[in-house]
Length: 371
Image (cartoon, rainbow, N blue to C red; front, side, top):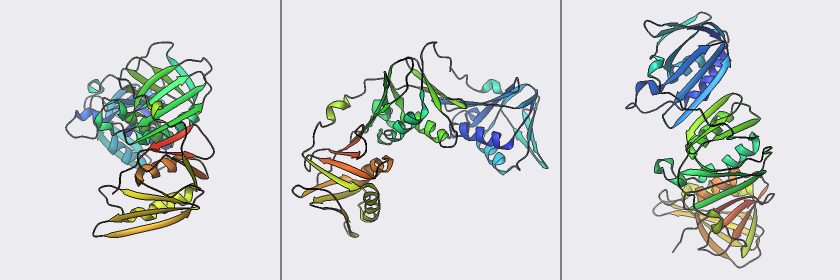
């Protein structure tokens, strides 16, 4: 194997695949590596932790075809420090040693044979592809994935529910204490449909890559138990979570008895200040709604208390309700609005938080009973 690649292209592709390499030391050593495959002036990079697999490819000058796996973290560290010059990779097939040269810099890295790398099963049935614009897909992930249950639970609510039907994309997530749901308009030209539960780990990885790779479209390739998310620059192959997702629509109240409107930025800043005195075990902040104002209070036994007051449009009887403040912050930070609406049905009923400029994104948060 002998090929030359631009330093920036190498670094970008390594950033795409590196995070999915296995992090634990008790797994197969090859899972900590990235598979390099050079052929037909194309370099394919692949990584897997046996749950998620990522592939990325780029055009390079291939003088000799070949393949090898190389340690991901060490290679990324090297690439980040190289000068902005072409980088040459040369494999000694007898020793599995790769020589890397860039300007006056030279490195030798010991690889592991490509034959030890797990086969990535990314062949999906024809006709199962759904192409949509990537922007509403990314927005929907951001507005839901944070509310999914801990991934280590490995049950159905550790994933995000995703339904594509006609020209709408609906996504929802819950951990039992909060529920988020968003409905976005998409351009589904072939009117294909899907109803799946995607692991939150997979969607967080997709978000991470999209933060530094510019894409316009994403193709969802859905099989009975697997999903591939394909773009121009990379693809992610992941298992789907099996099981029936809870009927969350039944939990969303049609109306709320009382409503409040607060500045999104003011609420975030006030919660951030008040939270310095929360009990770390409970994270409870009291929300006291009065006409024209919202008072936030927190206290920790043997440590002290905090209080902050912000303007609030509220015209009902005083209401005191307590939340895990982190749930409220997670919700309002994802909103793209100047103000936040809070729909209230009493101190023991779930509260509905949503942006004031759209109706199709909501976050339902269960309160904490206080004495």
